[in-house]
Picture (cartoon, rainbow, N blue to C red):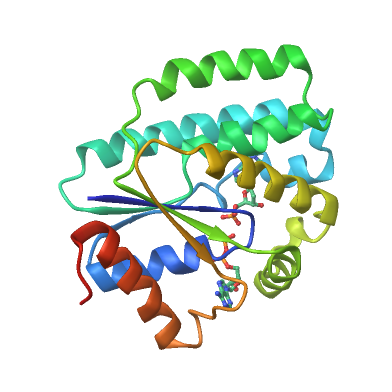
Length: 205
Ligand SMILES: Nc1ncnc2c1ncn2[C@@H]1O[C@H](COP(=O)(O)OP(=O)(O)O)[C@@H](O)[C@H]1O
Ligand SMILES: Nc1ncnc2c1ncn2[C@H]1C[C@H](O)[C@@H](COP(=O)(O)O)O1
């Protein structure tokens, strides 16, 4: 079993992924954030570092997908390779922060690699409006994310809405997290787990 959690920056992916991994006793695959050599520089100067960062994420995500494929345990994955291409890289290109030449080069590489990727059994999209994202990014308080613009988050949310409306690689569960607090309220986590059980096993537990 392979569940992937997708959503904008600060939507709560890592927090939910950790809770689900603990609940189901499944392996957790997190994304390369703390050991990322480009992320801080990228936030300081996006056009300068866009291509480098996308290649780094693509490679680390692809390596992770290979590990998931060979994992004997069921898996919860925090963010997918699809988001790198269809959300972040596409947004950088469309907003003029990545050149057409770099985007096409990146996308050809993505196409070659993604043909080897098995989609998750269930994709969970955490949908959050801008105030919720901003509140949670501030709560997390990563120094290099302090200058993320509202426009950047808004554009990413638009990319997510577009991508999710066309997603057809497997089962999809959309969870509106605007009014959920699965950190403080166990009932909110229970609601999400019930929805997952229904999608995956066809039952309430
Ligand atoms: N539904 C929620 N309600 C309240 N706080 C949340 C919720 N989801 C996440 N948080 C908090 O918001 C911050 C960012 O969450 P995180 O899981 O790191 O987001 P992401 O991985 O999507 O970027 C963390 O401090 C986390 O505890
Ligand atoms: N492909 C990506 N391009 C640009 N930035 C990315 C990409 N993947 C992740 N990120 C950034 C967004 C956040 O600042 C950190 C971690 O993501 P999060 O949504 O907080 O888990 O990396």
